[in-house]
Image 1 (cartoon, rainbow, N blue to C red):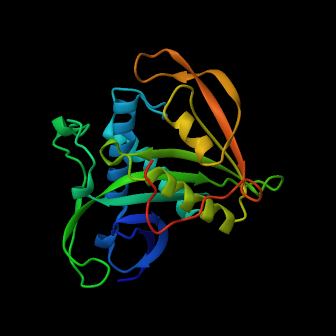
Image 2 (cartoon, rainbow, N blue to C red):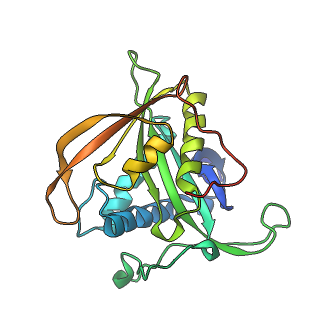
Length: 245
């Protein structure tokens, strides 16, 4: 069978960059697991935190799947970099009584069983995607050094393990590796993330009033924007252990 380009993801606990790879067996394509894991944590953040994140309830699995499928297509086109956190299911910090968003459709939290290999995986374990962030790197001759941080999500059942910081540290490394040092991002005014980004070295720029509809009650909410120059403003360093937040 002829080989083809697909996406690859290391399925061991840790922070991983989704990359393009060549495979000879279509059945080894990890895209369904990647997307299903990401959209479940995306929706969990909307329902649990009322995050302003592109979609409003009622939330359609197929619609979110198609949306993230396009984002992963941008990885292959080198227009976006996606970084995920993979965690052992046994490391959930809480269950919060959270049912999977589409449990009524027979869809549980997406997990995958990773067999022991005697090397990086010493014993079989069930893993899941516990966090994600992406870096949009659109074409621009006037600003080839700019990029936008988008869709930083940490699963509600994997909080307070330093995942957000670890994701952002890897993202900043990837950004510099691709010559992108001027980063911008936004979050809802009053959200928990509004306190997180300054701790990560991002400078508050200003607020856009009436930026979007809240998934909680449909009211217009404000959005605050942040900026960081990775050449001057204390780039995050990837660490062996995760700092508790």
